[in-house]
Image 1 (cartoon, rainbow, N blue to C red):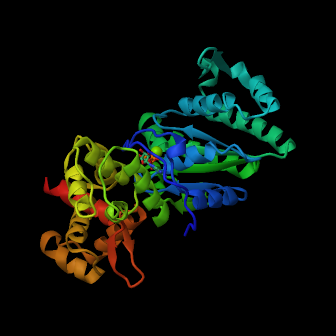
Image 2: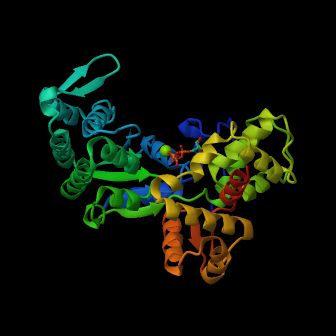
Image 3: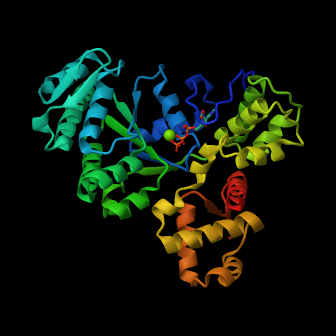
Length: 394
Ligand SMILES: Nc1ncnc2c1ncn2[C@@H]1O[C@H](COP(=O)(O)OP(=O)(O)OP(=O)(O)O)[C@@H](O)[C@H]1O
Ligand SMILES: [Mg+2]
């Protein structure tokens, strides 16, 4: 719990927009833990979509007062090993904070690349395209050597890694995706001055099974789950949003926003933006109904869909049906024990108990559900259960 919070600032509500890193609230404890953990291992930071993973990486990369530096590399849209190599090398080449020696070492390797001036573009030369991963590995080893001599370390924060692996699998085949994962593993193992945070919202377990990779390619990673904002920061963000968006509110509003959104920052942005755009007063007693209306309005909250639409892409059709029924049942009736859940579902599905257990476990790994200490199974976030219910009914 944070003892003293700063005075709320004005933050514009831009649900899903790229907000200024100064408007990324809280997460300081987690960031401290990530830095500490990264000194001895690499990290996989996951959670469902829109929870704020990229924002955490942006905040880490913006920290200027550290000896060790963090570079955020977005792998969104990377669907070939060539693009992976070009993206990482370009981001490193243009990373202002690296020493001249590191950049010069990188330049020595540029026989393999075409570098265009202006907004820097880096393309792998044709002759090197037959093995872009080898080029990437050589470049990173060279950088690592200099960093080692300088006794510094660099944190490579790679965003959207599982998605990238699946895209490489789709375009170049599972062997290339596996090879990518293997090279990343080898780089982590042999170059301690380069540390890695890999993030993404698709569970790595789905990726591993789709590309036929074994645990040995990821079992060095420490898993972190992002989660919602810590309660006092969630309230602080609500106060900042209320001040920054020309909405009328009362003293209970921010506490109610946190209760209804579970402190998920994207949903806090959403509900305040909705009240602002609909010119509604936000009072302690109408946050819930405004939230429901925002969730039902597909134009306003199209990004909420992405919180909940991972099932049909990663579950086979039978599993997807059962997962949908489990999520329906728990959204409508709240926490449940497995035998009761089995009873409730048996009339509609007739699925055997072992399937139920397997899918519940999968939904827990995918951050939809949680198991409480007394053995109940429930949605992890009540707010997302509500969005699920509203969307399923429409
Ligand atoms: N700590 C925060 N403080 C304020 N706003 C935040 C915070 N974290 C996230 N947000 C807001 O929530 C939205 C989603 O955040 P972000 O893009 O970081 O999520 P994500 O987990 O990377 O999503 P995706 O899985 O879709 O890539 C953004 O619009 C951002 O402004
Ligand atoms: Mg992101």
